[in-house]
Amino acid sequence: EISESGRIISISNSFKEQITIFANKLYQSKINPSKVYIGERAGITSVEFVNGKWNLNKNKRYFEKEIGFTIKSIAEDSKGNRWLGTYVNGIIKLSDNNTKLEMYGVENGLPTNNGIQVFNFDNTIYFGTYKGLYTFDYENNKFIKTGLPSDQSSFLDYYLYRMVPTQKGYILACQKND
Image (cartoon, rainbow, N blue to C red):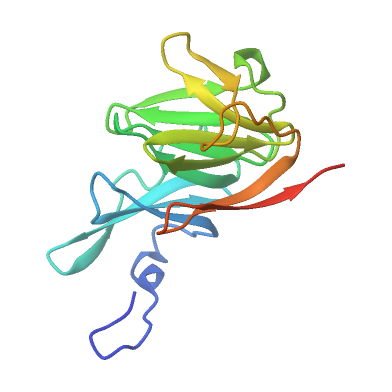
């Protein structure tokens, strides 16, 4: 957190007696901008800025028993679902205000369960994998290979391990092709 005087203050100090957080990803909710989701080595939690104070999610971690592994990336779709990319456990979808959990993997059309990067671009959730870019087909509840957002016919077979949309409408991506 940055104070009014411009000083950086750790918000985790107020929670250190309740939970230890090793953050991999911070994601500010687009639906509720006062909430920040924290993808960590032991799952996902959130903090919310209310009445001038950061408050930890009352359950500490969402689905702590079910999600006990590293969260690599977080994105939110227009339906309010949170999509979580993991290092080795596929994709997780949190829905119904974080009360419903669904896990997805190769049985749902992903080429692998490893190293998946999730991001939202132009209200579409994209999943960067070892075998290129995928989107989710809500009607059939499965992942489908897709092309670039600007050219759906251009398929990539590269490992897309970091993707960031820019303010000018571009996507910066780190890729590896071995």
